[in-house]
Length: 319
Length: 319
Image 1: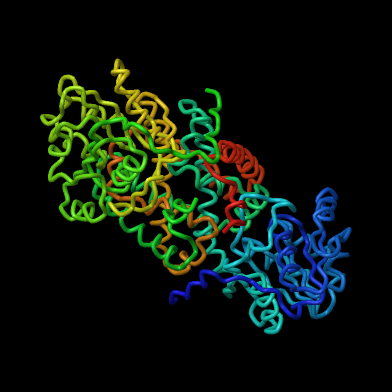
Image 2 (image 1 turned 120 degrees about the vertical axis):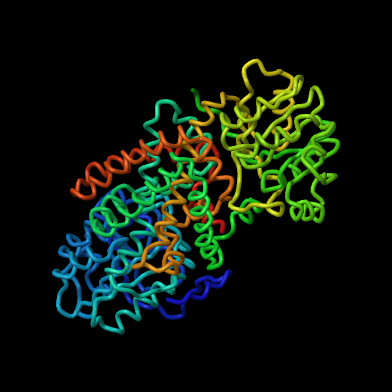
């Protein structure tokens, strides 16, 4: 695979003249659902935006925040007559919600989701798809450490990747319009199979999250070093892990349970590599350590070059 | 230990009326050495700032950059008649450099360093200390992913912790003046024993670095996922690890070799915890995962509350 062009440094999404969809339904009003509601309204991506959440307190808060145009009482009510329906619920709930809304979906509607795992979602949702409804799974690779209806904002997807994993033989028009929706929110769209998605995200997202959750827990359990000290001296490296380990627990539980094979495979490799470096430390093998630490710099340079992150000094100098 | 007060959000270092030291010598012109040179000049912390580096190309670059007031040809030349001498070299080189400069140190001079490991530095340097020279080891918990004389900037230590580990019975005046130097550069100074320092930094800095170096290496070795894909989709969590894994290889090799016991101890605990979560994933034990992911959020909140980091959404919205 060749290196993709870097997104323009000052790119931005603009308000469309004509919406992509007549009615957009968002099921689940967390960080992602509320961000889609903000972005779809700001950039005129749907004529009407209807949201639903199974939690009455969340629905009430969404009304207060003025999210979308209407808050429905149930997922099925939101989905009825919608042209594009996005499941913004934890991966483990996608099958159940798809079953709930199936009879409300109109022919030609496009069902989508935002799950961080794709193979399990495809398997859970597909059996409930009515004839004539298109399923185009999506995964916006974007997020913050915050969750809930208050956490969303319209620029969350700007210059971030959104991966679509349409099933073989999917309706081309449905894929194109789903792409238009995400591009309309500023995302850069990439298409791959659900299986490959789960491998790529297994290493770039799921394994890092599991490791961050682990190390923060390990730090918390120490008796010799107080939690207050861990917090105070976190700038030495630990801080970056805590940001990741503050992500939504339900979402991440579901990710690990539903991408088990890829995560266990990556974990196995990681543990082997960690053993090798542990051994080098134990036996004072500085050469192995230095060689390893040198080659890992190259990947970082690639990320900075691709515009997925500014060099740290630049950020520090500005702040 | 009680929670320390958060540093004021808009704190800054100001130019002193009177310098803390007559002559300041900086041995080693990397990120930290060049940052001290910038800061000491900007905030008037020394009457004369002399730098040295064993690499002629680095000395030449330091001259071009106008670092300090003078670039000496050798460490001993820089240290001669200096009131405060800071070793800014990798931890493993501190003993050798201390031996080199020992005979040039004047009575009453304060020798210090910036090593990320303290116990090994104390053991390596102490035998070379001439009578009447005070040793006040220091560790500024600050850095970026960049190294070399061009990487330094005067605000690197602003609002960051600097840990002093003076030996028992150390000269109080020497500790006070070392504290004044670091506070003059904007740092918040904390005093502890070298042994406790190595434990605290073992969990907050050394273990996170080793794990970040490991996972970036694991990602690089995958055949099923290309390096280009790892780079593209790094925003899912991986990116934060790559920043850490781009740190200076020589410095970090020395850290692990010289804080072996604490790092191996933390690694052991981390591996046990990781095994527990791995097992929960393998056997589909969602409850264990959810419980673990919930408690790690508390530490993150502490870090944000302490002003050591802004909440991520705030940063994103601004950018």
